[in-house]
Image (cartoon, rainbow, N blue to C red; front, side):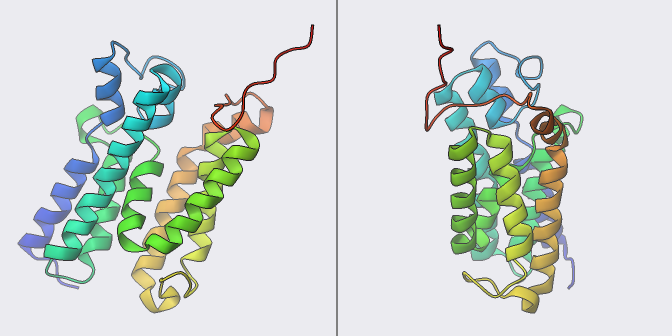
Length: 212
């Protein structure tokens, strides 16, 4: 694998695009600094919780797009087979370690989701189903995110759902590393899940009203 000037420009550009803090910008437009409220994270979940459902969905969509579009662009116009995967990974790294906010970013779920749609749409479709089922059953976005990431970390190694498994070793390694990094970024959520103090978000059901 040779890294040319063109490839470096793709990677740097992907990192800078991935680093755009859409959640923070949306919060600011609505008069809220998401770094100071809720979980103090700039990701879509905190926007959803502190700014509003509509704005959370918009933040999620934009974070997905900044992983998907550069990956697809690299597939169409990139000059190397390895470039789409590397570009997608740099988008995720940019989201997690954004250069615009002193390298403090989101947890990477939405941007990784976008990257994987571009690379392995069938596999990410099943991962998304895992997320939806876990979230619907628990009302914890963090639990759904971690379960989907864990599924991807394992499933990418098997030649199923359009993946090549071990035959595409770089993709297996990088997707697994990204998935495990997403789980690691959720370590505070995991602690709150274990202690029963994690905040629930109700979309598929309504919160139970305390009995009089």
